[in-house]
Amino acid sequence: MAQRRVAVTGLGAISALGHDVPSFWNALCAGRPAIARIESVDLTNVRFQNGAEVRGYDPAQHFESAQADLLDRFAQFALIAARQAIQDSGIVFTPELRQRTAIVTGSSVGGQNSQDAQFWAVYRQNSPRVHPLTIPRIMPNAGASHISMEFGISGPAFTVSTACASSNHALGQAFWMVRSGAAELAIAGGSETPFSFGFLKAWEAMRVVAPDTCRPFSRDRRGLILGEGAAMLVLEPLDSARARGALVYAEIAGFGMSSDAGHITTPSTDGPARAMQAALLDADLSPEAIAYINAHGTGTTNNDCTETRAIRQVFGAHADKLAVSSTKSMHGHALGAASALEAVATVLALRHATLPPTANYTTPDPECDLDVVPNESRSAEVEYALSNAFAFGGLNAVLAFRRV
Amino acid sequence: MSDDLAEKVLSVIAISKRIPREQVSLDSTLENLGMDSLDQLNLLFALESDFNISIPDDEAKSIRTVREMVEGVRKLVAGATGQSATSVA
Image 1: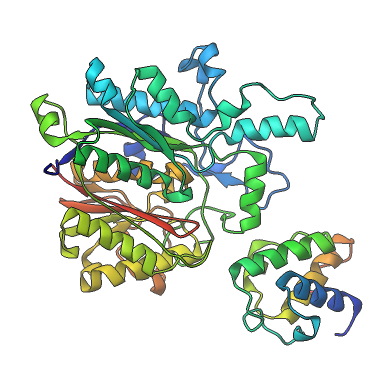
Image 2: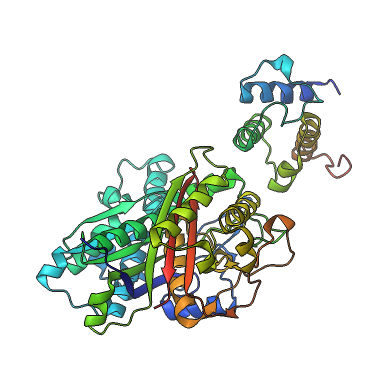
C-alpha cells in the first residue's frame, strides 16, 4: 500500500502559558515565560522554588464531580487537550471512524498527584486505607483510556513512556499508523503534571533544576525548569482532510528514533544525531531542506552543548543557517508532555511563518554557537522543521514537519 | 589536614564509589577516581546523609578534588552547628 501523507488538522493545549492553543501561541510569540514560584506544593526545604504551573485551573469548569473523581490532574489535562483538538479539527465521528481511530498518548510518570497524596496518607498519617480509585488514577495510560471512553473511540489506544521524549514517540507511532493505513485518524500527544512533593524532591536530588529560570543555550544557564500541561494533535490523511474541507495546519513528514546505548543520564552526541538523521531519511529530506529546529533545549549544561554538537554533526555548514529555539524557556519542561507542546509550537511556527524565540537568553555560549532566536520571535517562511526530544535513558525521538 | 572529618569524607567516597579506601587521597580528583556524573550525585547524597548537611547545587558543581570536597563539607558542617561559615569560606 502506498504511503499516505499525514496532515495535522486539530490542536489542543493546556499549559502554564494558558488553557488553550491561542493563549499558548500568543505567549510564545511574545517571548513571555510562565515561570514563577511554585504555589501548589510547599517547597520550603527544597533547593529550587520555581516552575511553570498551570494557574487558575478549576476542574469543575471542565468535569462533573463524578467524572473528576476518576481523573488525576494529568488525565484531566489530557482530556481537555483532546477535547480542544477534536473540536478544532471539526471531525465528525461515524461508528466506522471510531473503530479506525487511534489514540497514542505520552506520559512519563502518570498520576503523580494522586500517588503522592495517597502514599502520604499511608506513610505519614498511618491511614489504614487508600482511595479505591488510586490505581486507575495513577496509571499513565489513564489519559488515553478517558479520551477513548469520552468519544467512544475504539481503535488502537496505548501510552508511551519514554521520559522526556514520550510525546514525540507517541506522535511518531500515531503518524506511522495513519501513514500506513493502520489507522484512519489519530489523536496523539502527551500529558504531565509533575508537581508533587515527593517527585520534586527526586528532581532536587538529580541537581539539574535551575534555582532561577530556564535559559537554554545561554552561558549562564543553571538547569531546567519543570512544567506541566498537555497537548494533543489530530492526525489524518492529507487527502481525507482536503476532501472534507478541513483546515490543515501542517503535515508530519517524517519520524526518527535512536537510543544512545550509553549512559542512563548523560546524553551522547551520536544518539540524538542519528535520531535527526532517521527523521530526515523517513521524510526523504536532505539536511539542507530544514530551516527551523524546535530544540530539546532543556537549559541544562549538558543537554544544550550536546544538542548543539549533534546538530552540527547532522547539518555541517548548514547548521549556521538554521534557526534553533527552545520553547521550554517559556512553558517549562513538561517531561512526557514536552514534545507534544513543542509539536504544537512547531506546527504553528510553520503555519504563521513565525519562529518562537528562546526566552531568558542573556549571554552567548561558545559551546552553543547556533542561531537560537534569542528573546524575540522572528518572521520566517519555513517549509520544513524538526522537533527534537532526547530523554533520560538515552532514548531519542525526532519529528519532521512540513508547511502545507 | 589529616583529621577526623577528612578521614570520614575519604571513607564515604571509598564506600560510595566501591573502591579501596587506600585509593582515595586528599589530592585525588573526582575524575581520576573515575567518578562520572551519577557517581558524583551518589557521593553528594551519601555525604549529605552521613553529615546531615545540604550541599547547594552550585557549590557541588564547582568541586573537582577530594580536598575541595573535604573543605566544602567542613564549611557546611560548621554552618550547621552554628559556627560562622563565612569565616571558613
